[in-house]
Amino acid sequence: MVATHSFKQKLVNALLSIVFLIASGCSEADSSGLSANDFQPEGGLMPIDIWLDNGLDQLDKIVFSDSSYQLFLSLELELKTLRLDFANKRVLQRAVFEDQDQIRTTLFFDKAKLTYSYHKEKSGREWMVAYANNKPYAAANFAEGEWRAVEPYIVPSDQILLSKAMKLSIQYAELEKKSPYQARILNDKWETFAEIEKKEALNYRLNVKKGEYISIALHQAPEHIFFTFSNQATPRMEYKTWSGAADSTGDLVIQVFSTAELRGKSEFTLKVNRQNPIALQ
Image 1 (cartoon, rainbow, N blue to C red):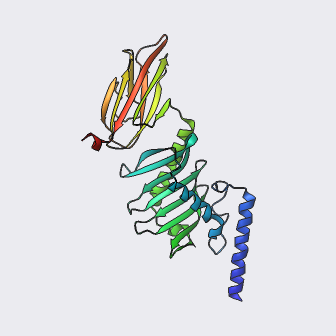
Image 2: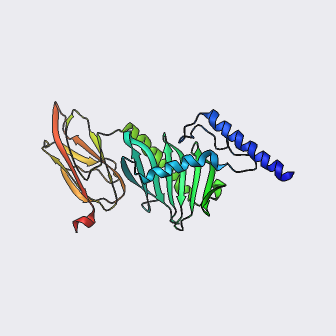
Image 3: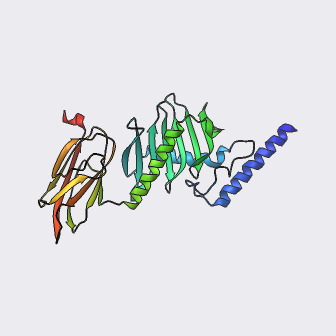
C-alpha cells in the first residue's frame, strides 16, 4: 500500500506540474516567467518529461552552427575565455566556457534570460539543468544510455564562474541589442567611409583574442582627425595608425574624433586588418 500511495502521489505531482506549465503560457525555450520552486514536487524530483526535450532541442542546434557571429570575452583574469554565440538581429543564443576541472559548460538564453545549461565532463558524462528567472529548478544526468532526473545541486559545475559567465553574457546581450556604436567589426579585413561633424565621436567595436595581430589606420583623413581606444585602462593616446598584438581577449572600442572644433563635416576612411600571429611566421 505504501508503494502504491507513493506512486500515485508522484503521478499527481507530475500532472500538476504539466498543468502549471500549460497555464503559465511559456514558450518552449523560455521559462523566464516561472519561479524556481514552481514545479518542484514535494519530496520528489522534477519529471524530465516536462522539460528535458526542450533543453535537448537547444543542444541539437549547436550541431548546425546556427549562430550569426561570435564574441570572445575574458573570465577569471584572463585564465578562462567565454564565447558568446549571437543569431541574426544580434540576439544572444549561447555562452560557452570551460572551468578548471575541464568541464565544458554551455548556457542557453532566451530573451536575455538563462533557460538551460549543459555540462560535459572530460570523461564524457553529461548533465542538463533547467532554469526559471536565472535560477535552477530541475536537472538530469545522462548515464547508462538514458537521462535520469537528479537534484540540480549535484551537477558538477563551478557556480561562481557560471554566475560570472551568466552576468557577463546578459550584459553583452543588452549591449548588442542597443548597439551603441557605429559598427561592430566582424571581418578580418574591414574598412568604412564615414563623416564626422561638430564635437561628435564615432565608436567602432572590434572583438579580439589575446595574441591576435591587429593593424588600424585612418586614410584620407584631415590632420585633426584621430582615433583612440576609449575602453583601455592606460592613458588614451591619439593615433593615425596603430599595429600590435592584442594583450587581452574582449572588445576594443576604436573611437574616431576630431581635435579641433568642426564647422562642417570631415570625411575619413577607417581600415582594420587582423591576423593570427602564427600566420605571420
